[in-house]
Length: 90
Image (cartoon, rainbow, N blue to C red; front, top):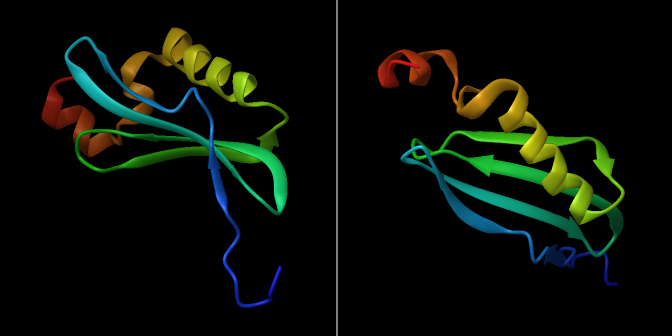
């Protein structure tokens, strides 16, 4: 790879838009061509990103399971900051 090239971003088949209790989230699971670890990124309707990448996931299915676990443990609040939670009445 040429030093000036950007690494390729590889998206998982688990990347998708989801609606949970009327709240829209864009869930992206991806890695780069130069790093084997998968990253979980969740964007809420306000454009706020929640990123889980430390440590990176060994597989895309593990990243998806982390998303599901966050939902089970914290609910949709996990993907909103405090100001957004107040605005939504969460």
